[in-house]
Image (cartoon, rainbow, N blue to C red; front, side):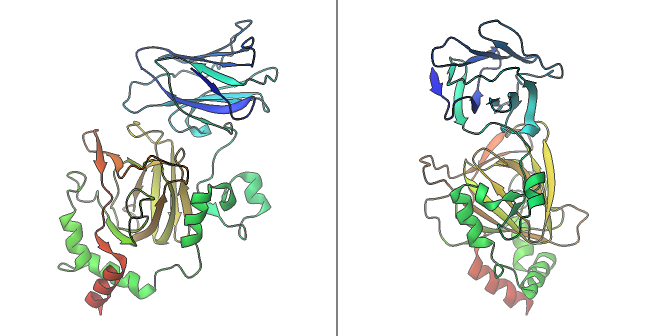
Length: 358
């Protein structure tokens, strides 16, 4: 099969393959006279010039295909910077296993591949730098922020993510202090709603009663998201989610109270995370169909306060594949489906909690 690169000389080829066979494909020019031969083996990544068979060897590359369920791979071609990258899972610097600076610029136009290589997608922009997790508004971001790539400018996210951000990032979108106190009281007091609901959900994902959280929804499912698009999630101290993925949706997450620790995984059944960050009150992070999509959230045991977040999900405008579940890894390492249901509507929840507290 032949797929055209969106921009000549650059792009990221994301694919799956059969672990038992080497994954081979080529980047080629219009005349199919010049190109790069790429091969992922169980041991490493091999790259050769098509004409001369000159190898592009990364001496530090000691990894190739992995025998793990759900693994996928990527290869990035960057003609402007003469840089090649290859990796496992999410296409980003942090998951790269191969890197090489090639000698001369070449404007390749196509990717050619055959079974057992299966294309997932081709991304227009090549891999060039680390990707910030915290989003900043145009009025808050500085020149130093841009130069250091410390924060993600909101305008660099998709129109769908910008729409979600603008719904929950305003100054008046906050929890009143007495409401937070009422939630804490309800969590800690036997017989109150939060305390009882956490007991009911204590085996939601497995045997650990801390592997759960409360989902308070806002509005209705309009068919644009996996579940109801706006969800206030309540994380008592020590509570956490399973490792899970987000169904190819965009998402914006804002911390409304406390802090949340996030571990990022290259794919759903990966053995270890590639990144970790802690977000505090006011921080906003993001998810796209290709980045930050597989993670685990936890309110660390060292913290003193319940963490409360607002999670907003929506499929992109051109998406025609709506999946109404989140996939997660259970305590036995098996992938399971979770339907993101509601524990209570926000308006009813607030009335219940405040009545219990008064």
